[in-house]
Image (cartoon, rainbow, N blue to C red):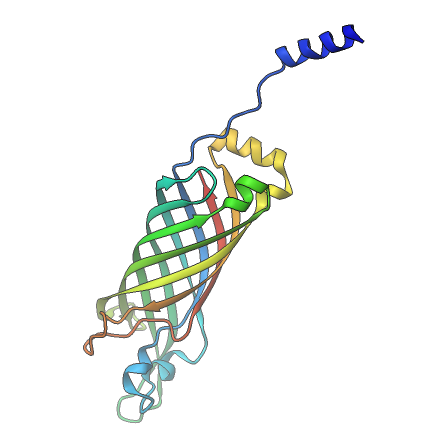
Length: 231
């Protein structure tokens, strides 16, 4: 018995230590988000120029955010400052000003949003108890750069509208599905966690209530999903 104990201790002494987790310093999120600008709200229901040109459906905007960790509680969450951008396009037919009917000419609205945000990621369950769930939220300042083009591709109107938004979401840790692959990915790329995320966003992008600006807030709430990489 004594020989078995001595042999076991010897094996422990020469066994390599468990790989330490690499330092966490930021994140990158890539997601799609439903969106429809609230331009028609400016007319109080009397006119619907946006719907007349682009229809009543909701479109998609695709956004990417890069976050820098400014505080990490080592298991109770992380506070990040992030910058982001994205792209949205809506396609329609112009309206003849004399008849009010579609003119047949193509027109396109394009938006490139720029975002500066502060967010908190609560990953206590995954880091302390190996439960693959996370909650997160963020507050953002938004600047929507937009332009409208005609069928020839010429810009007919352009501008930028400022505002803010709030986002709340939940994440599922994909590392839980294949821990071995996750450890290899961390070793090779420095990515600690890969999350499948779902969120909702409420935006107010109307130059803070200015009556002279296009209201590019979402008509309701934006529903988004994507991937978040924590490194």
